Length: 150
Image (cartoon, rainbow, N blue to C red; front, side, top):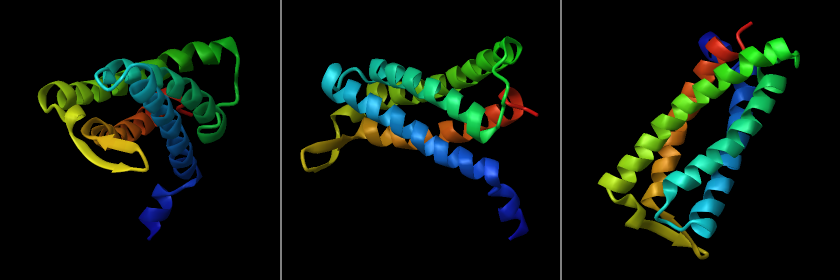
């Protein structure tokens, strides 16, 4: 029980809450781009645009609320922004590679898993969900140990 308390401290709980919010931003933008703007054959472009929107949101909430990095000085931002972006680009490339594999090799974009109220969930959407779990874990590690270290 003591290990669970250490794991679920204020920082971790806030990271999970804002991680869910960041993921929501990512998914909403991804859905709009994938379903409405570009079409189902272009998950990589839709994912790239969703990534940019989510990274901007994540930087602000992680800096202010999760890791409580209070300084907005140029010196602080010169360190935090590049390391944050590098970490996010790294996890983004992992996600992009996974999506590419699922779309180009496994052809999951043509597999409809279920449809509810006109909303269809295909294999790419499901793959993105699984990849998101990996990305959230990696991003927490990167932020805690490299970006907003105390």
